[in-house]
Image 1 (cartoon, rainbow, N blue to C red):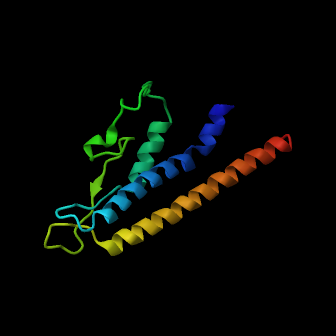
Image 2: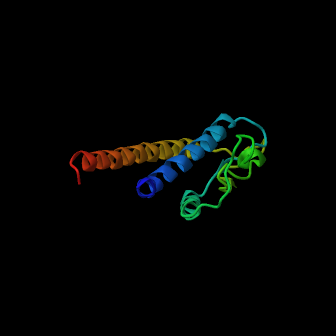
Length: 138
């Protein structure tokens, strides 16, 4: 039964996790807008979502038993779940080599935040539907 509930919630749970990690990347871009030679980073959300869902369909048999074990983000090239972090293309070059375009970053940040909130709404509806089914004995 628990496995069926996990499968039912997996898509939105995965989307929220990726959106949260993407929000951190976008916030880092904004925070480093004045840092010389900083390169704006982002993820390909659709590819990351497909990869995460395909990995989530089976258990690899590996588990972290300590927070220090699987440090996927330590190299700065991947998120903790293995999603590759990409560099954003240069929209308008800067003299100091920084590739952060604040208009792009603010738009992406707001769009991602809105989609995150929509994901939370979807999970709330799923949980309410499960609770209604349980209460009605269906």
